[in-house]
Amino acid sequence: MGQQVTTTTEKIDVKGGHLVEKVKGLVHEGNVRRIIIKNSDGKPVIEVPVTVGVVGFLVAPTVAALGAVAAYAADYSLEVERESAEPAGEEVTGEKYRGLLEEYVERYNKGDLDGVMELYAEDAVQLMPDGFFEGRSVIRARLAKELEAFSELAHRYTSYVEQGDAFADEFVFAGTHTGPVTLPDGTELPPTGRRVEVRGMELVRVRDGKVVLDNLYYDNAAVAAQLGLPPGTA
Image 1 (cartoon, rainbow, N blue to C red):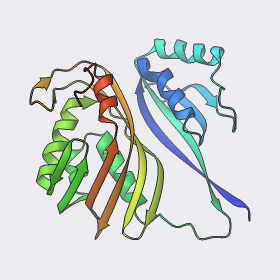
Image 2: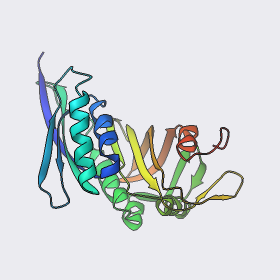
Image 3: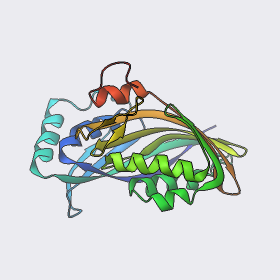
């Protein structure tokens, strides 16, 4: 049986200093087919086609060109074109809650805390390496600290599956450390200006269109290392 290919487009804002790193990361996701880099006025500056099956397409000339573009301005946006394949002739499933996830990602990247919390049920619980958070107000307090600690957010998901009243996704979180972070011993790490990027996954359960359970898994030690903290701090 053949496959039907679906193409989606995503916009990602990025600082010039992180441009090359961001493009490399997108390429290695495997399903990106084209990246258009635009300046702050929305005008295309360079287009990077991604050939299927070519892993090392970012050879020296391409990297050099991206580096030159990155040095020219501080702010850019990436128009990222992705392809996904589904078996042809079969009903595409797993789309019931994808819109909920995409709404969360959009609101989170805007720093819209009120909008994000509208997506959680009053009795929602969240389990993650940082601890267990029960109730919408408690989750809100945790998220408020997170949004205070990191700016220039670029949260995105890279895969999605759904079954029954639950879905799971793999995600990439990226942000710049521009606010205080509370460490496990209660002390605060002042802003370092470092860019942090971490991959993870989550299992989400939904009731009446609201998130009631959100279990997140990611490498806390990797976050600590990128913040310049000694091993064991996480």
